Length: 254
Length: 254
Image 1 (cartoon, helix red, strand yellow):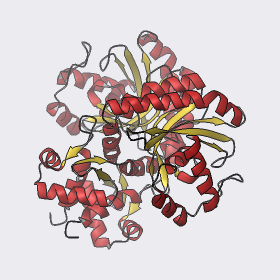
Image 2 (cartoon, rainbow over the protein chains, first blue to last red):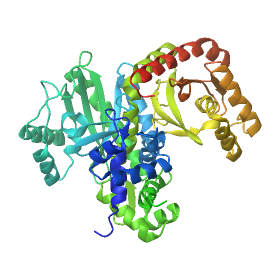
Image 3 (tube, each protein chain N blue to C red):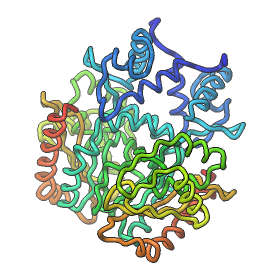
């Protein structure tokens, strides 16, 4: 592995060491969190500072908005805003609910586009937010598209958490609901991630029929029943996913 | 400069080489765009692929959603979604217009939070989007907070583009409108970035009174006059910025 650039690996790990719980870090905290020596942490932090990705007050380091340019490179290369945006707007207007697109980055799904309604808190689940795949409708339709060995490896290593009393956490049951999502072509998750929240998702497929992303509509459980999600939302959701899939293929994005 | 990690610098530059215009790149395109040898480009791309940030079909490389985790590290460490979100929701409901927060990464502003209304296309200007500082209301209140020498350096190197017939592009005039924004405590930009779009912005200040971010409301020109932005929007906008500033300070984020 003479080609592997360890400095790059560690630099990216240092960026990811910052979070809501650790908005600023000292040099020795970075070294400890990433598992590198303080001397290496210092070289990385000074390099990132010189490049404008990190700033410091002398003792504590924090990230700068320039870091967003990295994620933006992915988002703009996917170009979902321009391509999928109008279709999502239409779906959201038709269903009067929020809709989102996510992709799989195991063990999580990652939000890549979102059209919120003003009725649900909208900022917290922004683009880039991650949720555990097993407990989400988008995660389940994406898991259903994995090769068997990848799905098994995921389920075997999974330590599923019961986010609510409804969360399916056993590997066997999860295998079943994922298989069901594959057969049905959609997944409906009812308050497994959060009490009061239901969502329904369908895959966005590439030209070979593989799910490359998922589209969902989420709704307050108090306002929208499971039956209503199936009878009123599923069909427009499927049409919207088909339109987005066609548009993405035409533009060569999937 | 023995501390500088060139591999890290180049790795980040390779990630940023991808965009809406270049969603996938060959090894030699990456080498040319970043200004490195093909051998170096190969090492970087293989390292990024092994880490899961890049995938390839053998010939063309593209970014994966894992790249979003980098930008997310910044966003979650700022924690604006949780802290500013409720105040922004309230402002958006009160004014019935979209509102956003951006920070300065010269020569651009970078969107870090956004509450869209369904009346304006919402996805395209998502978090991470960049706009030229000089032509935006948020940019102008942030430029007004720069030390004199930084502002001068920015204005001297600026090649301002006339996005519309209204765009202020001369350095002298820009210095004037920026000074005006500093004195007034807000900036109003009328169709300088895009015909039909007006926006008004105020600074979010840290405990020493320095603008660390800006909050704006944007509206269709056909629906909202300049006078209405001043009489109906400015006051709730200022109150909202004050609330966000207080909340961010209390939580130690600024």
